[in-house]
Amino acid sequence: GETSRKAIARELLEETGIRAGEDEFELIGSDRDRNAFYDFYCIKRQTPLGQIVLLPGETDDAKWVTLEEVHEMIRRKEICQVIANQFLCQEPLLLERQTQS
Image (spheres, rainbow, N blue to C red):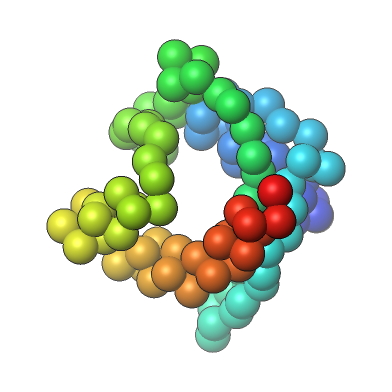
């Protein structure tokens, strides 16, 4: 019963302690498979790692990385394949927004 933007704001808060308004999220794309619909958002924020509160059982760690570091983490299989695949599909849109900033 909640909108996609409401859900992403709630999930970000629940899993990281980062509070963001629904209007701060920019939809960069949508996708679907046999079982689900996906909306992909980006948010540009300066949040110190010390302010991130991890949700036990949901989030294990947090760190800020560059896009190049994400690729290295994918290569080393430090990111699960499903998330890695989605990142690689959405990366061109992230890069496009990065150049618009």
